Image (cartoon, rainbow, N blue to C red; front, side, top):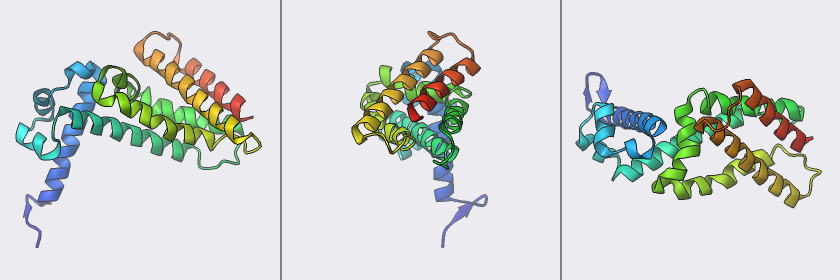
Length: 196
């Protein structure tokens, strides 16, 4: 029999504490950058003791990686949900994908900073950014016409992911000063042109 306290099980409480720590990690990493994330700062923001931190994570690096992977998985799911029909016109597919990306990564810039900027400054994430590239390139490759040669599809997908990552990095970092709508339109144009 599972014991409960205030109507919740031990596993439920543990999962809730982990979610609090991840939310605190996202807030710190997504606003203050890598240097803002320490075990003490995360615990303070989560309103939990270090005991609960170490119940979930071995160290600060493990938390940072978990935050990063959580955001990456949210983005992967959003992109898959945005483009369920590969028979739609390339422009419609591109607009749906870019809109889903923007809604997750720009409308909540913390997530965009975690996914795109944090791997540049946090050694715990450097390899993660490189490791995720093939997965996102595969999502783009699936949207490209099958009439393209396999190597052409691969190179185009990788090139597009790189171009989009740089555009959004510039936008989130403040070096690319365009409106949100202009950014979306340009990204849609890049993707639709490649897929037509």
